Length: 254
Image (tube, rainbow, N blue to C red; front, side, top):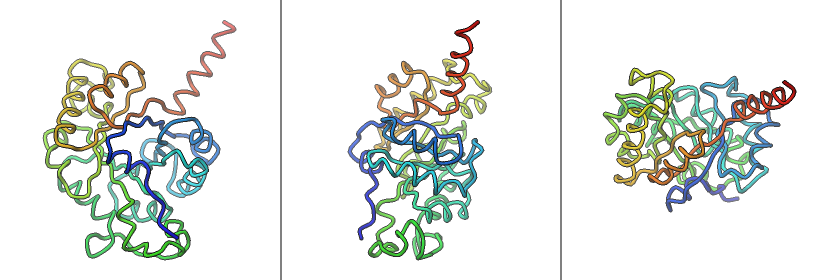
């Protein structure tokens, strides 16, 4: 059996723009629903959502029922133990939060790779190897793995070029919320200074040949970031959609 192709990584490689949705509700029902909703990718969030690592595999299985949709997993931290567990569960694309330097990025790359190029622990009977059925998994796995590092502070932006140039980094995702806080404007994601920092970062990444991602829940803002060259944009969050829907349903009877 061949290792499954990473459609998300391949799309990045040819510059095809992709729209995504954030999964913050645990279990497998919501990821299954999101996987069939027409988005190019679904991100399972283990950082700011109440989703534990043990819930990642069922989420991947649920999203995997929709072969046209890619799954991304955001880890809780840049911790090699978390990489090891989630990669063994079959995740092929990982997002790592709070990367502020080339050293941070290099540590994430090390956790993605088997020795001698990295420190990922080896285990054969895992979902990643399709329970031992993937031919030459330990030498072929890296080709289909995709690492997204999240730059979300002023320090990260200052070190952007070195972070993006780190061997093994496939894309950079800009975190508007934490960036706004780092800039002294907490929660003001659409403040002109924050907006300018995001568009400038996208331009720098595009100029350097690194795919740029960002979250923008306002469709007009998302379109503008895409027009500026962003390659992958998250345009919705499941819990936000639920809250909006509930508010609308109740407001109708006021």
